[in-house]
Image (cartoon, rainbow, N blue to C red; front, side):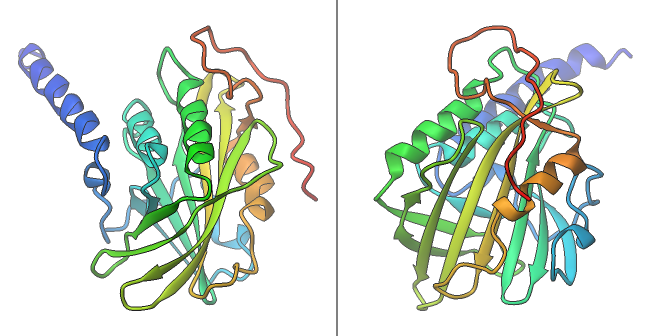
Length: 246
């Protein structure tokens, strides 16, 4: 116990360094590597993703669009969560990959700010040419394409689609939704990110919305209708929300 006070300054500096790094492009602080982690109990299982043949969990956001602070909002929020970093579970489905990123149990006095910032930045990036970085088992890949904000989503969701082309001509079609949720009977705000990435310029057969209801069930989470608000106020327990998916 005598080392506790000595560790405090170090922890403060480490957190500050992580937040500062999160402000830049490239996701340097997410430490996305090819080193697998344990599959979180709150994640989709292999059987939950139709056609999936393999499953693995990694630290960080495996597909990151460099649109304002969309992804840094997720990473910075995860610094306040348990187990203190973002975890993405990858499922291989034929010529596509399904990603589920979990940032749950956030501990912050501004529970709605992260999702509201994501939704605002997605709207601001609509129609622009954006870069995407792919954190794979090999060297870092990147591509560019026109960013299209998904319209018609409820306030609990935000999303986008885009087709990217890399320097080598490789194309990927990306479809992603960000779901504002609460866990622990509405006490803990969080974000679940569902992404499909095809290895062509066409959408994958499986869409993120196809997996949303199951992802909520696995995480024991509820969509949070208050998340779009940006004012600082105590977090309220939302009522169960039906996503309308079959």
